[in-house]
Image (cartoon, rainbow, N blue to C red; front, side, top):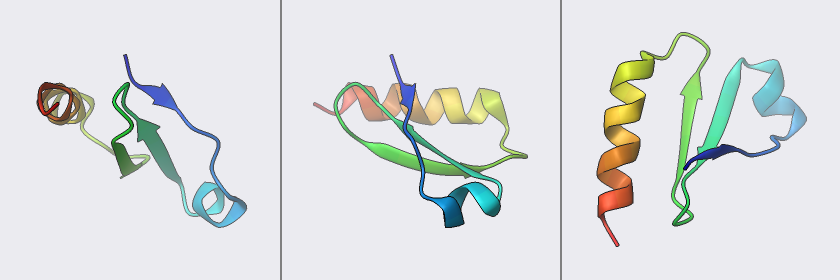
Length: 49
């Protein structure tokens, strides 16, 4: 299950969020991200072992 990692101050100020998957892959998204699309991307990344 993906977790939200702490971000540096410049990332937080810009409205970005870094999501780290269970296998260590990182995705940085904006506050207006399409959650359904993000979940599809994360599922695909998790499938890549």
